Image 1 (tube, rainbow, N blue to C red):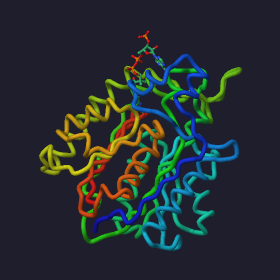
Image 2: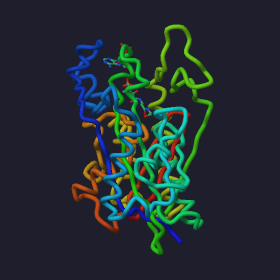
Image 3: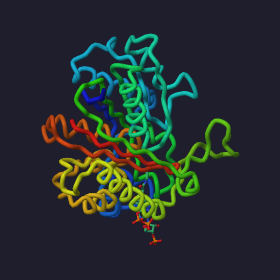
Length: 319
Ligand code: UT7
């Protein structure tokens, strides 16, 4: 028994913040942001819009794409580090809006690797026969944990959501899943407050990152992970049809493409449009390239991500 991707969807909030808008807010330039990161704009939620709203809309698109009814979903898992509330979790919030009752619904936090973690877990539930059809989402309101006075981080992130419907299948879809983490690096990338760590005077929740150091560990770790995926699956470097990477920095993505000996035409790049959307970035990129006709049924895909924790994950997928 395997699982396969039956449908995909995404949702970007309407409000757009360009690099030129950011020039008015902090000491930065469009040129610096574009050349160092590949980002030109990001989408931000409205004041009354929350992670579950984005997740819900992406889920509706994936459900429609799969040609199913919400009632046919029997497992819901959302990767997010920016949930609406402490509880109910985002999975429960979208379950209720979709009119589904009684199925397991939960969220997990693995920062930018959240979707890969969610996909890996859902795959195991389907393969083990505990569910037949899963809704797997990556959704974030990163704008709510950004310090908008910190030019080193505020230019990087955006909001969005992506979703897939994963269903049991006799033919292999998810071929291999690799997940990892290393808590030693917590000081390089973290959010300063949480639930049990309460804000100090005058300090709200804020993402803090030593970007340059994160960059180096990301390239090294992702490199080892993709090598492991190829080796464990007996694949040569040229055999992947599409790389669907986490959209954090175009230079990290280019380094991975080089390591995989893949031309950039075979890499799905969406970072220009929405920056780093954390757990939402991989499912949004996947949906983009499926809907515009680049990715076709039968293609071999490599999905990968790296983020706070540090956490990392990859999935080898026959679409
Ligand atoms: O998704 C989770 C994982 N996250 C990542 O993978 C992010 C990894 N890191 C990165 O993408 C990059 O390290 C950044 C885009 C964050 C930074 O790029 P960099 O090439 O590593 O730059 P840097 O941090 O070494 O900074 C270079 C210079 C510094 O100035 P000095 O010290 O050379 O005078 C920074 O102060 O650029 C300056 N700088 C800026 N200048 C204009 C930093 N941020 C900005 C800015 N605008 N927004």
